[in-house]
Length: 84
Image 1: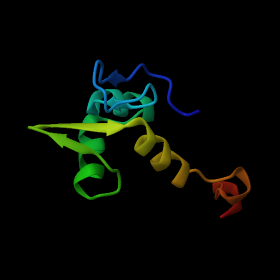
Image 2: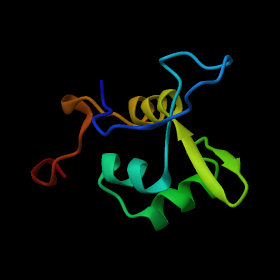
Image 3: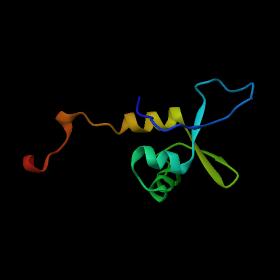
Image 4: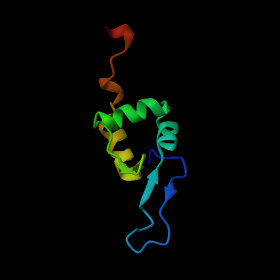
């Protein structure tokens, strides 16, 4: 699993299950080693799915993992500078 940070969870709600977890922009940025500004840009450009709650964004653990899986390149497909 890609996610290592402890996410913000919604508690005491009958609609949620233990696997329902949401990350703040800062938490998602930390996981991906990016700035919060970059994560916000990815959300606005619709590269990363997020839920907007008031003026804040929350990224589900499932959406974050899907995003990371879609952008994963196997080692044999990476362009190394010496191969170019």
